[in-house]
Length: 454
Image (cartoon, rainbow, N blue to C red; front, side):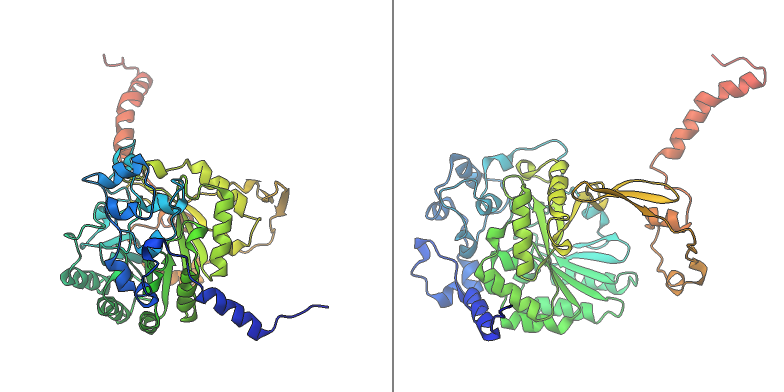
């Protein structure tokens, strides 16, 4: 006989989890709950000096070197997030993400300031138009705390490099005047550290643009500063649906009762939640660690979305892993957990190539009659191709006829659609003209009975 749990008992258990708290270090033991739960108090009491950090962490010599460095990336850690750090263990995955070390000061092969070429794809300051139908809008350079591997460390954290109202106006004008843009991602920095009136003004202007269908927010505030996710903020956000949110989690230890409460508030407001993680050596470069993170995320109603290969930016060298490690992780997830708990592993291609999915090879071979595939266990089977398939006719398809112009970004899909016959690498024509002169002229001369030039 199946015994069903009483609904009131279930709700009571959930409330107990959501009302529990992460233990605080002794240095903050006397802080009243009303202050600790105030996101403004958290921001104004961030740790950023050697003396402050030494009160809660036994720093290693390498960490002391990183903290003392004059020209390092900005250091700020909210008291809440600092309370998650193991004070005695330098390999703590929370600690490694936010405490500077001497290793981040050194360079590495292929390091770039702007590895994704965002500046080259910015028609107006702070707006990146890399893909045909969507734009990235950097609305601030400030964050609640700062990840040591930040892909935008060239601008993020600099209080002198803030985006102004004039910048926001130019960003909105560009989107309003570019009908192909249907999806807008607000990022930074972190949009959720903006004053609420500024954030709402941006959302209101975007929602007033007829061709903007989706607004997204990329944030790490629910992880660094879950106190910021309150009823006032959520009530405002739900006025601008369809609104999506991607949150940056890297390890299951980040999913605390406070974070679960923040995610519940957002999800209950109808905001779909996704997770974007970065593959980091010493933090989550383990299939079992990533599976645990995925399971904790889906329990919090956050779907694993992307697992990024670490970018080629300053400060991130010691966090980088081989690409094979990411493939190993996906191999350990696919088939071993629910499909919606498996993120897409991507390399954000250097020089502005965009996100390139990388995954294990499941397609082994194919002919016109059969396709040979293997599953996560190594089981190999065949799928028989249909013999009576009638190809889709684009000339009679309303969706194909209404397809927006992609301004030369059709790519491989354009080859399959017959829009073009080739994609030519830079310098291809010049190289082959040169080869024609060098290699084919003697053959032509020989056929004509002429001597080769000397």
